[in-house]
Length: 304
Image (tube, rainbow, N blue to C red; front, side):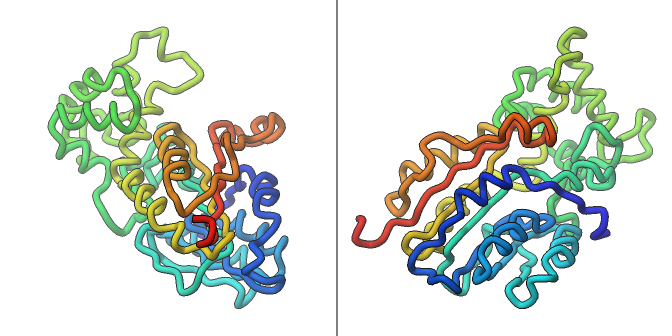
């Protein structure tokens, strides 16, 4: 339901400040914003309000997010177009002044048990951004060999105990069977992972299942491959002087963004170091603590 999708955009003031000036080529009453991860429309609403001439194309593969965004952005009328797609598959109709990608999983996705993203609320082991397509995480857990699963947990979750965890999860198969004697939801999965940790390590600030859940979510949604495609394509979406901003939430993403911005001759880095949330925002919205925002500008052709 759209009303359940109540998401506070991270780094809102930082995004507004970084995108305060549109490129000269956009003109004072024109310009296109492509929001690659529309979510509930929070960032887009702020930018449309700040730039009265700006038009939006918002992309999202989650139908719940699109419904919520349509409601939130309704006051902006025909300035808004919402497209049901993964951003890696998009081709813009015209050069954009601004391109924004917020790579985080939204609060509603995490908090709704049926989506299966969270170990804090029990639900099916799903984790798909698009619940109507692809392979749920439970099927992935049942399909991979023990070695493949361990490699996945290490590569995408940077999980030190990946082999121990993979061995335990293979022993407890099938995860796709919701009628299993120990339960086969996210709570049971998190419990099994936590049991692979020494008792003292289970009581730290970071839940023992955090890295493994991250790894499974990344794998289910091909997140890093999709990000690589975006970083390759997005510079060509921009008009000269157009701005590309990416909000990432873990080191695997941030390293890719940093490397792409440095290596791409089409881009000039605006942020030498990533912008992060203020102490006040981190206190008010704990999910902003890991957010990092990097911005680059599309070079004019004469810039080389």
